[in-house]
Image (tube, rainbow, N blue to C red; front, side, top):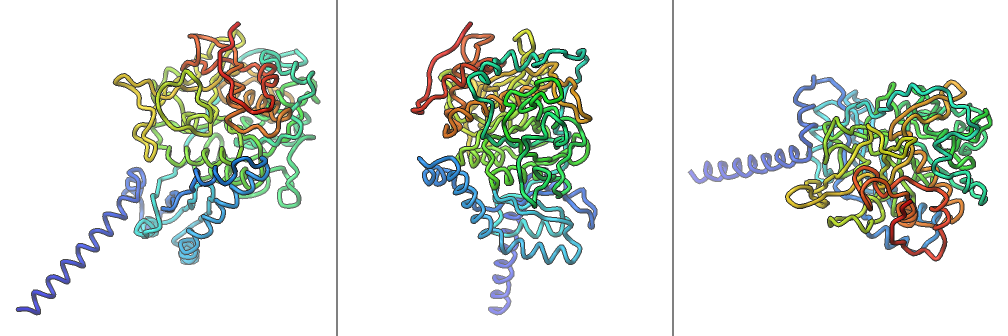
Length: 501
């Protein structure tokens, strides 16, 4: 009798322990990941991202790099996230290597900036990984149509300098002697036609390892040649130098690093883009320009996106991201795509809702008549249900996070074509490189400005359009490159006020 009682107790404890392990494993799988696994065939390779339990300590990074020069900030932050990933991922990577040799894993890649692993494996492997105590969460990562330009039927432009570059007063900055020289800008996009004559002579020198000026993260090779046209057009708006006859770039002497993240025409996942941000940090870019994003209905991992840009912001990298082209299709607070809904480094005085800051300058689009484009996504956005932030509530008297931060020309933009020459495109994708170009101009004058300072001078000197102050159509207003560069002077204080015409 006593023996049976003891055995029963042992069995009950064992069942309880197994049940607890099962619940923990299930909890580490996000709902989309659980649904994907439930529908999968036994031998199907499923795309997920494994996020380790130990996260990058951004406050500690900020304290570590406080007051240091920009290049040193980038190096120390990169070393910190690299070392964290190597320490916490070692055992899991070793096991995944064995599973790959057994045919249960197709591929896996360590992503240091998020302390995660991109993984394509069977449901069996993913569920086993979810049982590990060193794993925080596992998210599904399917392909999505992340590039969404708007068609344009405008006739060919004959001006020597395109209208959009003139409208934001970039030529006046060139006359001051600032053309983006000395600034490395990474374009995270569909690749770039690096043979285009307007781009070819100011591309990043990646040495023997990166002979084509960047990396193709989708195909995992060193040839980031554009196969879509989107990225080449974006590149031209940042730094097209007019060699082919038309000046399209805001910062014609900036240096271009190419990060190709497309997987098929217009398609992409989250992991590939996070890998690109890894590359940007490791190789020391000063600015990122990303004209793409993820709809709320796709369940992007907003926690990881905001964390990614917090790391880059701590490193001193200025990040410019499109708000999206969903105005009218989706209503606030989900009109803006992720990560265009991540908070900016600087808090504008008109931002009254309490919340933490982030590392994204979100960009809306305007027309040649200085009104917002009909497609330009509008705020506000909310973060009240996103762990661990729980800020910027919207509704019940709360106004959410104002989006975008700033606007630039984005409708009927003439820029470099994938086939050589020039073409028109529209979208916040086209507005974003104009802002990235202005950032390059600012940094070519005052290289040690932090992202929060770059953000502040652009917002404060923007031409206020729409309602007074910062609003959810134009942000702080349409960028004015000349006034922003003039204001970018040391000592590095923060400006207050509003510019109107």
